Image 1 (cartoon, rainbow, N blue to C red):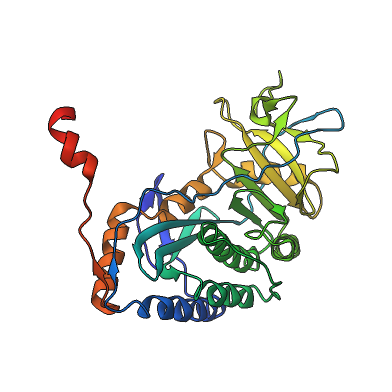
Image 2: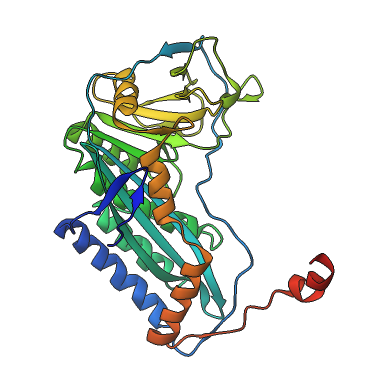
Length: 347
């Protein structure tokens, strides 16, 4: 865990290491390192460009009732806020499977002080021989029983990374101290990378240790009469939210919560927000407004969590160097055919 720098004139402190989280991550790290160590002296090739950032789930878009518009005013006090995010990237391909890395972040804001922890990166191998081991240890970290399921190799990295993020969210929910958990994505449960039991555990823990959880989606496939829900507007002056009464025949449900379109700033940047609360969803929104600086209607702590978790090219270079040194992997040259052919012409 690392990191100390400034953002919006606030000092960012390092979160102290917690024994519980450290123990879970040691278990996960041990398994992922084993999957990489098995590739000793194997040649690895740069991957094709792939992006496994959060993808919204295709929910049924039929809405059964009238829309409810809720004007908001900031609460008269601030609460602790914890935000989580995750990033994953493909490192290379080998004859024994593909190499991936995952990194997470936890950002805590309380009484004007921002603290953060970067968790990872963890490198691992995706193959028929390693997937089961990695998933088993992630479910152990979540303290859940894993149901047998068939996984396609192409979707395994997304499932592994999202379950890793669930581990961080479950841990963060226990540290709320009466505050709010902010996560990137949705509270939708059902598919393999978002098991109902895991989402329920996170939601209930956030409601037990705080006033609830809010999940912000930067994009969504949910529609209203054929148009994206983020097109919904009101003549009400921001900040306000629009509650969406979802019908009961959608394939996956939002666990113990509701779906909103948020307009939390004067800039035209709406978001889908799933909220589950102990008292009222409106209370969660008003305390987000009083506790979080909003950047174009999006919580700053989530932006910071995203920036800290993001795996960039320089991180990939560092991970490859580490694997070459410790796992004795041999990485082939990263040849960009397009640059070789067209760089003199395209400039």
